[in-house]
Amino acid sequence: MKTMDAKLAFAMPGTMMDVDLTIGMIFEHILRNNAEREVVSRNDDGSIFRYTYGDFGKRVAQLAHALVELGVKPGDRVASFAWNNHRHLELYYAVPMIGAVLHTTNIRLFPEQVAWVFEHAGDTLAFVDTSVAPAVAKAMATRPDFSIPFVTMGARSTELPDAYDYETLLAGKPTTFDWPQIDERSAAILCYTSATTGDPKGVAFTHRSTVLHAFAAGTVDALGIGQADTVMPVVPMFHVNAWGTPYLAPMIGAKLVMPGPKLDPASIIELVDAERVTMSLGVPTVWLAVRDELEKRDGYLPSLKNLVIGGSACPPSLFDDLKRRGIQTIHAWGMTEMSPIGTTSRLTSSLSDATPDEQRRKLLTQGRFTALVAWKLLDEAGNEVPHDGKTPGDLWVRGAAVTASYYRVGSDLPCFADGYFHTGDVCTVDEFGYMQIVDRSKDLVKSGGEWISSVDLENMLMGHPAIREAAVIGLPHEKWVERPVAVIALRDGQAVEESAVQAWLAERIAKWMVPDRVIFVEAIPRTGVGKFLKRDLRKQYESLLLPATTP
Ligand code: AMP
Image (cartoon, rainbow, N blue to C red; front, top):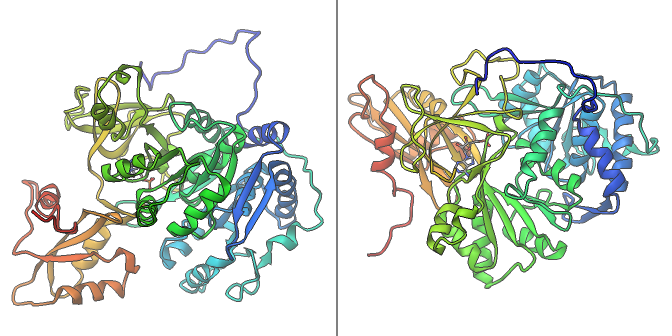
């Protein structure tokens, strides 16, 4: 099908109603059909808050009144800086339903970046969990010339003394709201993602893309959440809408459990058990720690049937260990730019008679594309490669929930071409449609689900007086899946210790971004056109960070 031609259109009377696909539509459905189901949320102090979707709806209306009273207008951006909890869920609905845009800010960005994204997004107000207020105060201290009003959620914060208090704002407000009609193509949520270099880039989801994503991600062969499920997103609500679950689970009528700030394995195990969680979602690092804890206790989580693991490749050992404890892993791949779910690994009919080993191999791929995602796999000359499960190609995607540009950056970038978006993932696709990531063409390292820009680190390292050139690569790591390692060549006559390079970096960037190792070489291998041969470096040092295997 041609994608960029003018559309054929003819108006025939007697077709469907012109109903906008909006978050308000999901909200209304929840209240009419699922009002009795529960939302459970862990507070900052570890205590549990619990209410029904019916009561949630009343507080969403109260929050909408508070937003209007604070002067929030349609089109305004309102930031959240919060864990997965019930107040954040209320913001997910009230802000877009009054026509404003919720900017879900990543609480793991370093202070300068937090201030930068607040300003870049043009946020007029920011809602902050008290437990992370110190991070916001630190961010604002980097930019004394810039300020926005804050609302704190939880106990009052000494770090943000002038902030409004969330509960005081809601108290006494009417529990219904005269919601405005909203055009489905209006922005609803704004989420920044790391770029290979420089500042993060904003992706603005519309009402329409959010609803369509919920429907596509909700199909049985995708996330397959049912009304009887109890769903616990561990993946943060500040990272691509917790993979759509804050809209999908309530829409389906599933009970929603939100772990708040307590993401240590013991707290997760306790919450899954206490609330009888049947499905959870998150990056591998969290589940590697849960797996270790379960093995230490020889414990089981009998209610937990399905675990969606994505954001980074699921280690096969994790898949196997969880399976032994009765938990089925659904491997998922996606991107902020895709709202995010692109693929999920479920067995197709053609594999029903396959050997367990063959089935396991397919389930360990990133899976099959949802119906909302058109894709193509291209070689360097731009030709489609065979879908034989062997030939790698650059993955390009297109769809109603794929971004067409970056907020205030635009679409004049090489990653947008011919109506498709270049993912930066290098993959194979087999004859059954299973996609497997084999490499990454974007120069980023993903550690514990968070991005680190190799290029930024390299530029910083090359600013060190003793360093001539530096290449930063991501290497496999047992806990974080991937960690950065710097390969450096020193200037003539210079000498510097590995630990001194790391300490020098730690003064300039967040500690978790400092490379685990610094390797000294005479010269960094380069391609014919002078680019670092990172693929070779990754191969050469593949097992550097892994525990030594005993022969
Ligand atoms: P983000 O926008 O931060 O969610 O990152 C999206 C990127 O994370 C993708 O383009 C991949 O490079 C990587 N990614 C996401 N899910 C997976 C997965 N299941 N396996 C390997 N890489 C993944």
